[in-house]
Length: 187
Image (tube, rainbow, N blue to C red; front, side, top):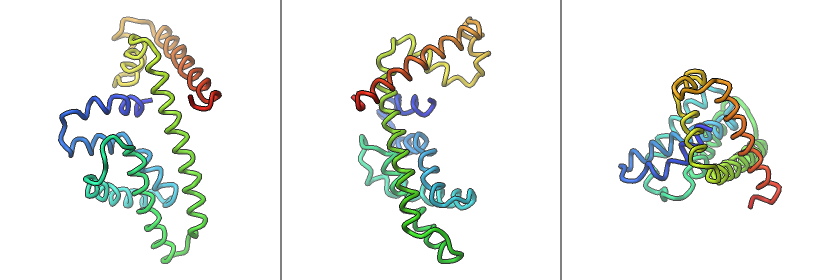
């Protein structure tokens, strides 16, 4: 949910920022997906860490080619995929590993999962817009707070059980909204 609110507010927060700040914000929002794209192919955590460092450098070097307003996550994951595939080929030559066909299947499964997740994020954004401003603020405050829910409840002057109840109700409303959209074919 945290990354959703980052995405949700991203367009507003980019206005009037430097190109470097835009890049860093977009990278922060997409970092987990980029990392997961690499991990799906490379596997070894130390190797993934090495590849993601290289990918971040490439993303920055190519950032002038990225068109703001398009899907940064998809663009970055494509670059990450190509880098991870290249790394895996080099590793395979050195010690034997998955073939191109197996890598392609892994990536296809990962890509399908990422697209489904992105579709659900878009649906969630739309469903969030249907909530009242008070409910949206409550969710935003709750998920952005550096405090535990117990501390959050105290700060808001509410009981912990009332915070949990409201969160449960709002999650149910959002889940039902997303489910209805899926059943209607994403409309």
